[in-house]
Image (cartoon, rainbow, N blue to C red; front, side, top):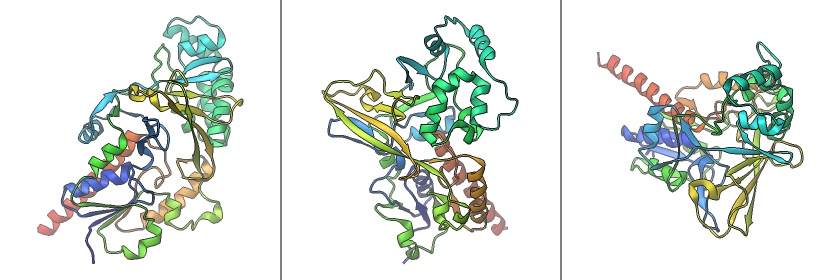
Length: 380
């Protein structure tokens, strides 16, 4: 017996937002989630040390979009958090993104202002009019020395590909500052939800028209759910189509192996996130969650991140080969009626958190506008 109008596969940002939006206009929504929790990769919890930690890596909310900021504030109280990142480069610890202090510390310079920093970059950069890959993109911005110290090997650890094997867009989004600004983001709104993301998702989904079924893999039960108005799929697009184009090789995704350790002292490192761009260690970074929200505990929890090929898919790998395969799946998706692919994995595209919220909100608005137009036309 049908008891829902909207079927949503996945309970991360995209799925939860769409569930809330459709429930708010009177639709009955069923959300199927393969994992044993809501919130997707944003899921967080309090660990045995009494520290709020994220199961799938740190998630830092930042946006310039006032509509997104207004939306998330409906479901959580937020406290300001301007995220900062440090990097261990040899024996030195420097700020990321690259700024005046990064260059001065690494190369023994005494650059004072933006004009001098611009001159230094111009002197060191290797110009590429239209960078064809990540290596050219970085060389075009910062030159060979910074590329070797900060970007080349970190990218290899992160993607299992050197920058030359990735699209230019992957490295072009990394900011470079001409001043002393050591904030990782420069967006107008930068904050974290008080109490964590899981509590925020609980409020997003706390509507009488929404039912969430955890530990339920859609592909195990899909034969039970056929009679819906719309289906929204947020998982890997190639999985939906049963890897039909895998003869051209599968789409590549990068996963992360999180190695958690308890350290029996108040703090392990001086900052929430410290990157390791060199080859001396295999992990990409160490996150110490205790720094977020100024938490208190006699011990501390650190998490080392190793990016790997196998496991939960986190990051699409953007290069021409994968884009070619994705376009085949995209063409299949466009042939479907009332089935919509939304989110990072379904669109094989990296989204920041605010972009994921915006993408889901915009999709809902566009579909509801089309629905309204049909009703108006039918009423004539």
